[in-house]
Image (cartoon, rainbow, N blue to C red; front, side, top):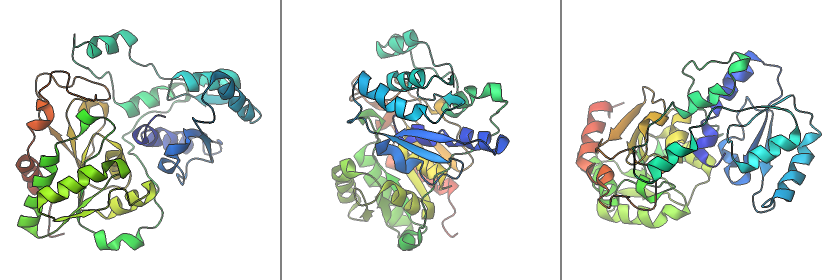
Length: 322
């Protein structure tokens, strides 16, 4: 798994498998930096950590896999399907199941701008495809995120949450949009918005707070992943990009307003608590994971979404008195 979202998106199929085969021993191999996304998940028996720096070559990956071979796994489900995971699966020698990934040439056509990105199915449903021989079927299961105790964050209960970060620049809604939204929320309801993010988001969150007129509570860079989940579990709602906080919020049942620009909303099954914010410009979606810059140079997919638009959507959906 190469992101927080990728890890959390496996939780529905793992739960479904464990429910059908309760005696199964399930071990979960994950990159060390994403361990907090899955530790504590009650349907997993053991979390195994993979350190990329310590295992950065073919020989070291094989050596690592050999340490797992003694576990004598009956089956391996490779939901990543990349070089490292394939080498590990081959070394383990157990029967391996994968889902069918999109053809490589389709990605090239999108990358070169010859066609728009089209989703074959949602990521969660694709993951279930790897388990079809075990009669595991998707029945609308949602993500789950274990965060432990949230009692030390009760001061943030029922406050609006904003998560302006993302793994790629083009997946980030504008700083001006977030700032305007926080200002409108404060002017109408008299409550400050909580900014959630990692250390890389501190500068952006500082600017959002400035643009809002200082009506934000900036927690960027101050929380662990588990703590972020605990705070989000208390939130009134979250406004977020197509990013990790979106999946965490779903996992803790926090209502979300998720903003999509260059990537496709069709990758995810949005629930009753999720509201899509999408400009739907003709050139979107143009990317699977987003890019450093807009390939057309105008960034309309995000710029055409204004703070006032998102605020109006929130007003129609959220009951502030509760």
